[in-house]
Image (cartoon, rainbow, N blue to C red; front, side, top):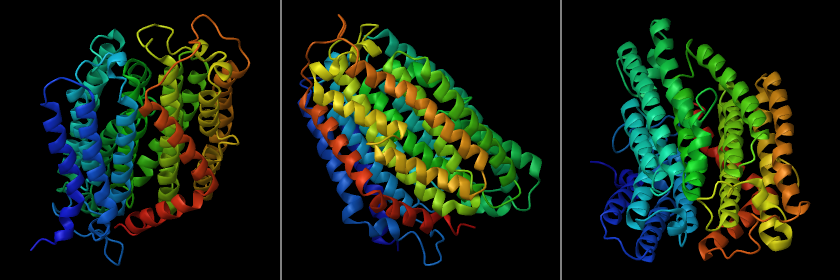
Amino acid sequence: MTNVTQWVAVIPTAVLGLGGMVLALAPRGEERIPAFGALALLLVALSVPFLFEGGYTAGVGASGVLNAGLFGAGFLHDPVTWFFTVLVLTGTLVVVAMSFGRLKSLGISSSPEYYGLLLMTSASAIVLVGAGELITIFVGLEALSLGLYCLCGSAVSSRRSVEGALKYFILGSFSSAFLLYGMSVLYGVTGSTELAVIARELVSVRQIPAIFGVGLILVGVFFKLGAVPFHFWAPDVYQGAPTPVTAYMASVVKAAALAMAMRLLWNGFGHNEVAGWWLGSAWTVALLTMIVGNIVAVRQRNVKRMLAYSSVAHVGYMTAALLPPGARAAGGGALLFYIVAYSVVTFGAFAVTMAVTGDRVDQPSADDISSFAGLSRTNPRIAAAMTLFLLTLAGLPPGTVGLVGKFYLLSVVVQSHFVGLAVVAAICSAISCYFYLRVISAMYVQQATDVTPPHFVSPLGTRIVIGSMVAASIILGLTPSFVHNRAQAVAHGVFVRQP
């Protein structure tokens, strides 16, 4: 008989999936009803991991090897699933708060469809982070992508939104084809879709077909992460999508893609002769992503595009921490901490950007740096919050959580003898200070211009998000060991003893 605890891990997915379908089919009307409905469903789903944490940790035996879950290896109920489920649900909750009261000004005409799609996309993200075999990974990733295509184009009255969604759809379809082809090749070589079996079989199979299959899979993984050279979709999509959706993609989606990458590279490809090949590929991608992301961001005047390239650069830092197979537990802990810290400040930065933009989202200059000119005088609290978020992204005090996060990542990279990559990361981080400080300079040094809103009144949800992200970044910066130790335990229990 199936253990009752094995059902616990699928409850959040079921709540979001079924609830999202009901919301999407609701008649159009006042925004409050679907918004509060989405909020209630998220709170119910979020309570499950905390009330029944044993339903997730029961999936790991005393030896650290994963036991079969409710759907075998299709959906693993382990600490990594617990960690990322909480992260996905919390991030979606923040996006709902950011969206409340802003949909009409963002050009979104149907609030039930928007909130329904958001919940169903988050359900797909949870499926992706818990997937332990290739078919479930593909299904979760495609369901996540389909929801994102619709969310990116949800502002149907905005040409940039529709254009970004179309570009994302076309490029995403190509990456899905590469991913599916690579999975089929790997299945033909190993005879299984389960990551644990693939890890064992890759020790004795022919290397050339296996490397070919792994390489095609990496294309799909790096595309979803937005890593160079598969990043071309990110700037246009980030700029064109409604700002809450952009924040969702930069944090929740990136976290889900990171979980997928960790399971594939460490649980599926990490203990065989093929590992040397994917390590070299990931090393090259990490190097290019850090360099290109930071250098191109220097030239951006549009804040959303600048944050898009900043996101690309941060993917490079995180990819570097995926490299050390001999220190996977330490690398996993650093990665999990970093994605939490990065998500907090990313939500905050995009919330401030949306607050400054106000009702001028259709104007070409709405997201320009000039919109932030003199912000310290028109709204000093918003300017102070944005300063904290940007300094955190740069890894400068008082944004100590960003500095600590980069320290954890680069320590793992150096300990694994990738010293050159760590040096490049430090140099690129110094370069990033320029474009972050340029926005701060505009807020505190430049005079307000005719495009600068003299004052603005943000909805309550946006103000709550900004205040919460400020508090979270300060708390994480003062007590980083609390989250890092928990993240280290999660990574150690799942990744350190995988066959």
